[in-house]
Length: 100
Length: 194
Image (cartoon, rainbow over all chains, first blue to last red; front, side, top):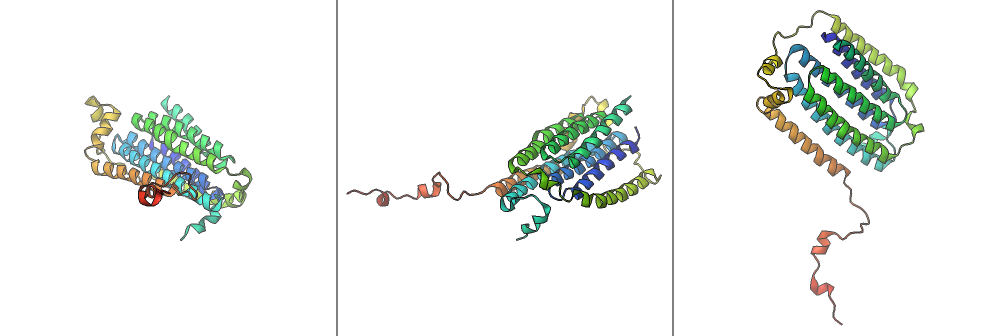
């Protein structure tokens, strides 16, 4: 297996996550899911290069990305629930109300 | 043989991650996200990272995706509003990601990528000592990467406290008695003898 295989896979998943942020303007939940997809593509890159270069460091750093993704999802969804409680919508147009 | 397995599962990953962002029902979207993570875990197994594959399943499917599903069902959003402006932003997004992908593939095809000759922690040498994937990860996580490991644990604690503080709200008309008011009762003022 060459490096180009998983590089194409991870860049495609990253691009799909990137596109998901653009097209879902009315739904912050799908934007958070797109961010999860982008973090997953970074994980695939780390683990793939760990396999290719015979190096364990990639898997260790992939573990830290998992930690950051879990923390980000928890905080993001907590902000989303109070945002929905205030404005009763999850559109990104209303998100300017978040400033002070 | 293993390469065809990789092609098959990576095709499923790309297809289901497409469906995550294009399906109109948010519940279906979360279910496709779970499916994506399952297939990504199989790809991690192909890359011989058994511990990370199982951790991906536990952390993402067991915690994050259930959290997403919980929030989607709690908020109860109507489907018609969600897809507004979808077609308006789609060409712009497609243009941007095509530029991004063209740049990336130009880098992949160039022969300027230099890989290091030897890794920092060689997996083959560790495997020859008779250690499996989980044991070797723990060995280096608790020695070389100890500070980062502690910081990531603290980050999780911070996220937990932050989420509780954000989501916690005081009720305006609580049915229960506040403990502070209950403690401050003085028996001389509250008991009356007629």
